Image (spheres, one colour):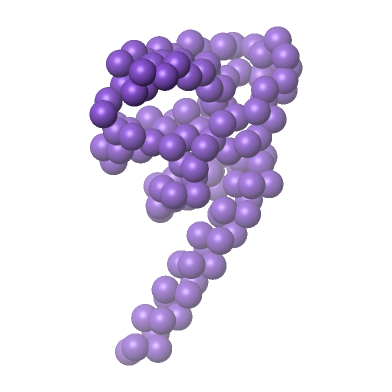
Length: 119
């Protein structure tokens, strides 16, 4: 099923603290974020997303074609080389993101080690 309604409001400066639904980083007062609202399967939703995760969600939706995303699990489930590079480039402040980067690097290291053993 698809979204019945979807809207993005770009907020230049947060008036109060929020938490990004994707990476769980605090969006502090004065920081930019997006307020994404919509109706999906008859249920209204509203979620705050930091600018980095907004780029990641755009990548997953427009580049990868994922139409149904669980935003709270987006980094856990959809991490790939492109998202990894983006997160490393922007030096995302979230401990959750740092842990995911570490896990991704470990997986890649194990893949290289397995390939070397097979040769």
